[in-house]
Amino acid sequence: MDKVNQLFSKIPHYNKLSRQYELDFRDRGRAGLKFQSLFKNFQQTIEKNGSQTILQLDRVGKAKYVMDCRYPLTGYQSFCMCLASIDSKVCCTL
Image (cartoon, rainbow, N blue to C red):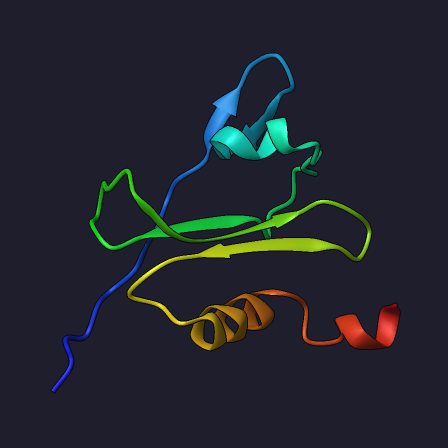
């Protein structure tokens, strides 16, 4: 039987300059992607205060998101979790 993992959300830090809460997306900004601060962006880890991100979802456009995942999650599991975190009526508003 496979091990069951509990995922924890990373808590965003308040940026005094931009006056908003932000998550650290590290190298993603260098890839030419400009992230939009949004409450639907998230990062999840296996440890409570872990530094290794297992799953992250970032908004990069009006209807564009970038998802990153790694083991132990499959692409299908990650996609389902990200889709569930986005508004259920997103397909009707595009």
